[in-house]
Amino acid sequence: MVSGFGDPAAVETAAASLRTGAQAAERARHEAARARPDTWTGAAADAYRAALERTLPETVNIADALDAAGSTLRRYAAVQREAASVFAEAQDDVDRSARALRGNPLDLGAALTGLRAEFAATAALGQLQEAAATAAAELRAAIGEEGDGRPWWDPFGWFTDAEDPDERVSDNILDDDAFDPDDVAQGSIGDCFMLSSVVALLNTDAGDAFIRDHVRWDAEREGYWVTLYANGEPEEVFVEYVFDNGARQSDWDWWIFGGDKPSIAALYEAAIRQEYGYDFIDGGVPAEAMEIITGHPVDVIENGNYAGLDADQVDELRDVLDDGGQVVISSPRSGDHQITVTDPDGNSREVDVVTSHSYVITRIDPDGSVWMRNPWGPGNSADGGGEFRVSAADVEDLFWRATMTNVTE
Image (cartoon, rainbow, N blue to C red; front, top):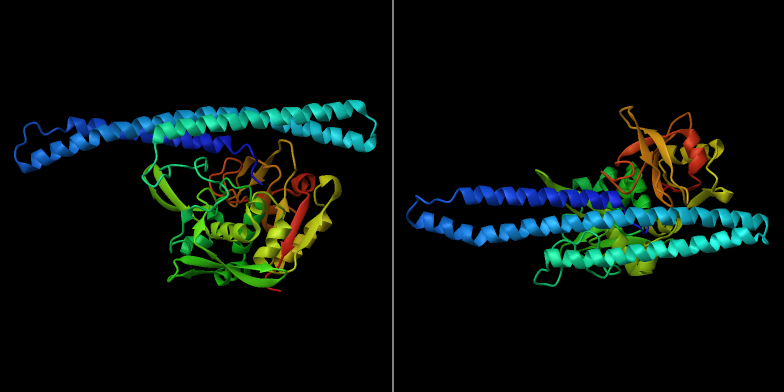
């Protein structure tokens, strides 16, 4: 799942984009102001001057708002990093304390260490919540609200009820790009365990066809029917609204700007929330989501003490993939882990392994190295998105559970 501290790198990227937008608006204002037609006469000149008088003040307001919002996000990202670091250290201390107490329940030192770590973790969460509240207030002041009471820019869902889908769907979700597994990007909901199942389906021909058969647009009602499964029995769920901070896909790009829209995965988010509640989608295990989405039997391989998968277990996963199946793999629960991976073009690079996270396995090489994809999607701060190869040694060291099914069976 996504860490409760969010992604400070993504927040910093958003801050930089806002600053660039502010600079662009300021340049546009200067250029327009320099072009005043003082020597013009007639109706055209009068109309141009009137337009300048209307638009230039608003351009200044836009530039100021973007600049202020960017500054707010930069400050918030700094708090995110600090709080996440404290929390990670505390979590490691809790894990070490728990291991020591399992070996010796009377180890008072270990118990005290664990208690102090829990206090530190709670304090870090409090620090983040206070910073989030401050940032939300500053953003409201900077950007204002639209006539319908919704903020014009709300990337983190601070100004809406996070548990209710709030973005009206349109008929453009199921376009050609919707079925590209590289274009699904997780939002701020902690549902990587569910999104990874959707991306795993999109990664295979049978899974792609399965989703096309299980999501359909209803033009008359202007919404989507999503087929889920309860105890193996299909049930159709009608989706009119999705989470605006949920799963996205790219929609358009122009110069430094771009736009996105809800992805197919967002429809599954909304449908599952409708049937099982928000708490289910904001943190869970892949097996439950995979059963609900596919209705097919699900197998799980995992090792005690969160030890990584061995060569024989990886061979089992290869057999599933070779048969056209879908596989999701789980990362370590805690700690900082940076590994060297290989891109499809053969280049190597360093990436961060996201803790308590679900990745999609796309293929497995004969030497046991595993190709995987992060449902955080393109441009994410951990690995940049796309498919990458993890060595057999790193799989055996870090990735401790695999969840699999096959929609062709």
